[in-house]
Image (cartoon, rainbow, N blue to C red):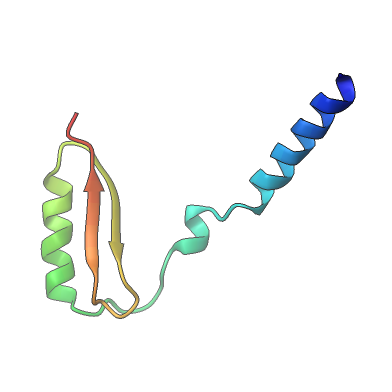
Length: 69
């Protein structure tokens, strides 16, 4: 039984080490479609509980997520 628990803990630890973090996904460089990105970002900041804001590398997709409740 102890061996099973040890195996489970090891699998969880190894899986957690392999997951990418938000830091790994941060972008760099100039923002494409800057005016539109700034408009969306202003809307995002007005939300009661803003959570995620994203911009595609080429600026073709911009969006955000928030929690109303």
